[in-house]
Amino acid sequence: MRSKLLLAAAAVLALSTGMAEATPSAAIVAAVADKGRPEADTKRDADRKPAEMLEFAGVKPGDKVADFIPGGGYFTRIFAKAVGPKGKVYAVTNPPPANATTPPAILGIAADPQYGNITVVATGIATFALPEQVDVFWTSQNYHDLFARARNVDIAKVDKLIYDALKPGGVFIVLDHAAAAGTPIDPDDKLHRIDPAAVRKQLEGSGFKFVGESKVLANPADDHTKAVFDPSIRGHTDQFIYKFQKPK
Image (cartoon, rainbow, N blue to C red; front, side):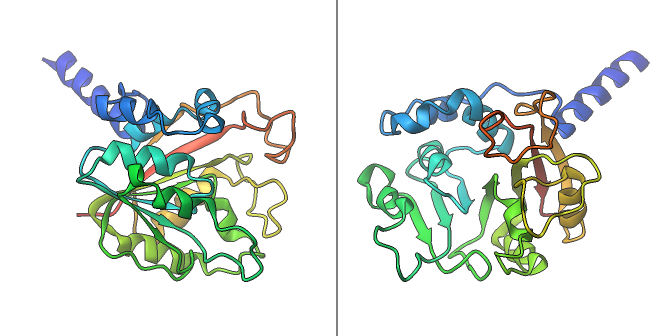
C-alpha cells in the first residue's frame, strides 16, 4: 500500500513540475501539420517543438488563447488551428510605427480566411485589454524584453494586465532564453536572456501560482554567455518553459 501511495505521489509531482512530457493531442498534431503554415515556419519545428509546447500549455479545441507579442505569427497560426472554429486567438501587439512602410505580418495572417478565428489587439503591450478572458496567455522569447529600458514599460502593470486577461484557473506560459542562475536583469538587454528564477519571483509576486515547467527546449551545452543572436548558438539556446496559473 505504501509503495502505491509513493508511486501516485511521484506521478503527481512529475505532472506538476513538467518532468513527464505528455503525448500531443490529435488536434495539436493536426495544427502543426497544417498545410497553410509557411515553409520558413515548418523548418523551425525541429528546434522549437511546437506540438510539445502546446500540449504542455494545455491548449485544446474551443479554448481562447492570447499570443503576446506574436512576431511573425509562428505560434499564432498553430494556436488558431488547435483551438478550432469554436475557439479564439488574440494576437496582442503594439500598433505599427507611424513610419512603417509595410503592415505587420500578423495582420495578414488574421486577414487570411483559413485563420478567421484570430483577432489582432494592437492597442499596445503595456495597455492592452482583451474583449474577453482567455484560457491560456502565452509569450514566447519575449518576457525578458519587458524589463528592457528601451521598452519603457511598467512590468508590474503588464503582469496585472495579463493576470486580469486570464480566466480563473487559466494559465500563463512563459517560454524564454535562459540566463545563468543568479544573473541580474540587464536593462540594456544585451544578451536577450533572463534568469528563470527571476521570472518566477516576479510572477509569483504578481499573484500567479507556479505549477510546472517543461525541459523540452533545455540545452546544457549553452553556457549562457552569448547573445541569443550569436550564430554559434542561435536557434539552440537553453530555453525554459514555465507554467503559471491564476488561482480559481
